[in-house]
Length: 398
Image (cartoon, rainbow, N blue to C red; front, top):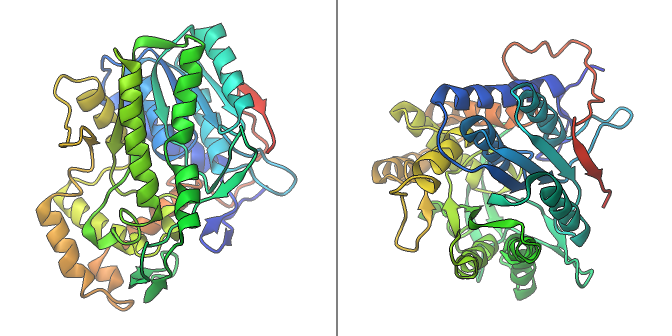
């Protein structure tokens, strides 16, 4: 079939298998160009098919020669519908990993469920014995509590009062004001249930109960703080409360693990399916990208995660803040970068956005998420959309 991007609002409903392969290959080649580092040996990545989770899997395999198990919930192709980008990413990753001689197996299903936790534990016990690194990188708009059956949905809202500021439609470049109504207490609690640390703790507790964690296991979850500009809708909003819960969970897990470690990695703002729909954030990132590219400090997921693992997690002097969080958003948060963003923010309009920001670069990265606009891909060619993940362990439908 000939595959073209299709959109429903800010959601892309198609993905290109060859474009996704090219995207994964570029990340693999980056890690190979950096050379090997002493790191983990057996890795579980919960949320392993896109973004930071996928980059973690690539960096662990091709940087530290680790065996990896990836857990995610993605859809295979059906009829005229392509598979999801995460499905094609995993096809590409496993193909490249197996060609290089690395162990890589994947479990597809609801990572919040007890069933998928049990399947994952069984696979670890059978193939790896124990894991020494657990990455928690789930991003989902809803979660069903496996013990109560209650489903919770997260929201991205300010707390206390409405928030008005500029935003941009990343697909059209239109700059306009947007007002986001405040959340209520139920919104806050629901968002914490979905995006907080409860499920991360459940994973670690369950794996520990099965004796599947090494004594010196490291576990990390990914977070974001950002500048004051985005705080009302992010850090001080409903998602911020969930991230606070995630941070408190890290401290609890760190105490439980005794000889092991649990921490939060605060990462840089990057283009994701979710971030494209958050008001204010796409405009902020478009300005940020232009400034960081001009400085030569811009990084994507793979550069961030390589730096996280090699220079922080498996290094003697990690870049920690006063709360013990690893900060690989350090280049984004440099004072001169943020001062320039504030200056541009007050000036940017629909008419000058192409000159003052890197909206085109933001747009390209958004398309790249789904395998589109990649170099050396003939998008007019007929391609096979029905690809299978080489070592898929489950296709649980939820």
